[in-house]
Structures are given as C-alpha cells and as structure tokens.
Length: 142
Figure 1 (tube, rainbow, N blue to C red):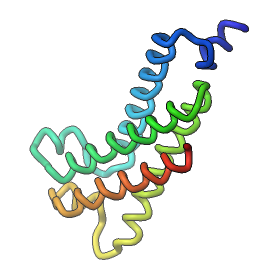
Figure 2: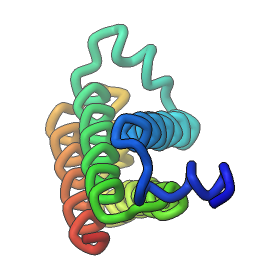
Figure 3: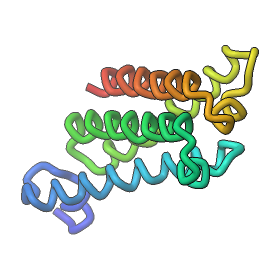
Figure 4: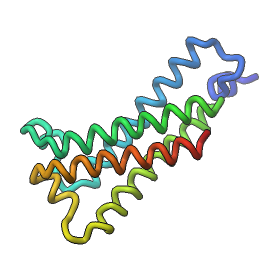
C-alpha cells in the first residue's frame, strides 16, 4: 500500500496515528465551520463574544458542539480520511442550510440583527437548530 493509501485508510493503521489524524481532521472541520460562519454573519463573532454578547456566544457554542457531534459520527462511521472529510463538509453545509432556513422561517426578525442585539432567546433557538441538524446529519451518517 502506498504512503498516501496508508494515511487515507484507517484500517490497519496504528491506533495512535489513526486517532491523531481523526483529531486533526475534526479540529480542522470545526475550525472551517467557524470561519465560514464568521464570514456569513453580519457581525464579528469574536468581538461580540468579547463584549459579553451571550446570544452570539450561545449560537457559536451551538455551532461548535453541533459540528463536533457531526464529526463524531463521521469518524465513528468511516474508515477513510476522505469519508470523514466528506461528512464533515456535509455537516457544515447542513449548518448553513439550517441557519438560512431559520432566518427565512422567522420573517418577523433577522437572526443576525437579533443576535448582535444580544437577544438571548434567538441565541437559544439558533443553538437548538444547530444541535437538531447535527443529530439529523449524524443519524444519516451512521
């Protein structure tokens, strides 16, 4: 088996190496999801959290937990790095679709605006929407 094949297929790989690669992929996918959402939102996530915006903290925390949950299922259900990355990417896509749907299904207000105004009830809803999507995506993976 080629070196590339050894690094892309977890079967027969040293358990420590497989764990390290899975960990690295998980962190990278969660980081990519956070980066994508920081670009999509109309506010600066880190600045809002730094100033004590609980609603943005809840939404961001929900995103981190939900992407991590998707990665859990992706890692447990796949024995290749490509499979893990594919499902991680679909997890990010699911979060984007969920964010968009939540925004469209609540025409009475803009999610971004309410989060930037520290509307904690919207923060809790966004947290919950992200987690719900992660359970659905996770179940579809396994």
